[in-house]
Length: 436
Image (cartoon, rainbow, N blue to C red):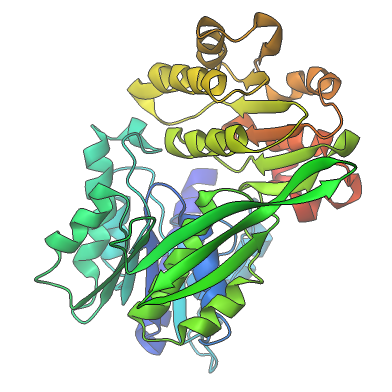
């Protein structure tokens, strides 16, 4: 019964969304890829919101429910059928409203074959931003191969308007190849990335440190964005990793492709706040530093997060608390073992592997030479908390990451210093999640 009602609600709000798009004809920026969609969507929004009347997906609501809710400007009612009924009414009223955004930035996610094709049947973007197509994408479990995942995501290109534009990651060969594929069908392409061939190139990346009691504590990242012979410095506070630099470069590239004043976009990016659960820097117990990346995980994003922890400077310990990477099918054992080896090779002092699949991660770390006394495995995040607390020393650097199903935010919640503001600091703090 619950699934039946869900399908009915999806059909209704999708129908309402199509009518809203038909009436108001907003310009649409679609964000697509296997890594970094939400961070890119939020950075682009931060850069453009002072220039354009624009709306974005809330959080990571990029599904067959989340996308219509964004278009209609409604909140997720979760399991409250009364609120869903009210959403349906409000969605219908939106069709007859007089004040609607001129632009939408829509993060489009897929789980199964055919998902993007459904979006492409009724969403006609003016701009498509492609973030990354890694070798082992999340959700590959439901496809024949990684190539099939990419092909499904590229379905949105078929609905890109004839006078539309592409914003592409120049550092990802599979993404960059789209420029060649679309050259006869698209008028404008702008690229971003570390490569000097990118239209918006990233250089001079560095970690920002502050000194606390003779300890170097990371507080953010800085870099330069280079475009059209110009170079502008940008600093991002409260988060770490190239994972957030790419989205900010994508925001600059989007400004270029839309002929918007790029310096205004850069000024706005200085105030950008990254989404929760994505490499956020949070003060934890014993003056330790939590790098909270607990929202989700794939082999690509897990690797990047571990690299960040490995490269940070500290005279205290580095602790990696890593959960299962889900929905990667036949690559599960191989990729968990690779991550375990990587933890050892990056010089991280302690590994806590969480979840049934992560047992291979722990075994590989030990087999690679990491001390058995420094590697722990637990079946669930709740079981790990007591032991984790014992190993957090003053000024430890702690990375927490895993797929949603691993519920790594429970460990984050146990170690942060500000226990009164978990809702503001961490993902999945709503009552709906707490009951799961």
